[in-house]
Length: 299
Image (tube, rainbow, N blue to C red):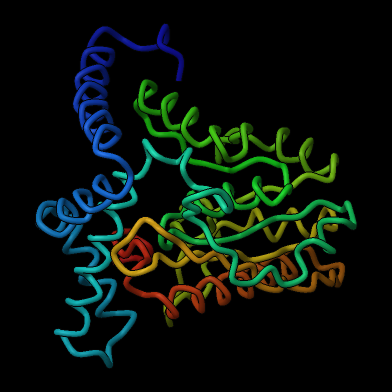
């Protein structure tokens, strides 16, 4: 959204929102990464946890883990709010997310066959979910020498959106493709043998229903359709926050074989189901670090 397309009322509203947002970002920057992350975790546990999305998170967890006790689910929620607050507070410090140097924040625990897959030059999609600090995936890929672009959902507030774009590009990919307007950019990146980083765990009303934690959820078929149409390789990436800290273990997992049968619709659905199942596996491994506030399933 360009500023000139905004009405006076929108400029006033977005300006006020941005002023509050940037006040917190300046505070977090001044505190330094570790203290900012700690403050963000406290805000998450004590403030975010009392907001309306908490009801959605609690209902989602009960549906996904009916065998867990209420106390177990509440513990997961507390850690989820801590992780969310920390992630927000870490945005002014994305330039410190490094694999090397005197104080590396990212540690590679598994590369799988990523180097050889990328060396094929066919184009690769790294797929992940909102786990840990989800900005770690594209940053790690860029630092490993896997250049490409990140598919993002830009905030409605254009002032915040521009700032986030700059922050993500400090160490991560400079190219950031909007989810609803980037088909041509995606094809350009793919034809150049580049990498696309996509978070595929959010609800997509224009998607297709596939099983997710035992219930159908509207899911984007775009990664599957691209892989089938262009012969792209799929890899999965996950990151785990180490306790209540601003340090992360990043893992790349083996991908999925793409074998078209000629039935485009059936192939797309089948591959989307496989992708979603792998994402569910990652979330089940670290349920306290996934963003359970998504309205992922129908009421």
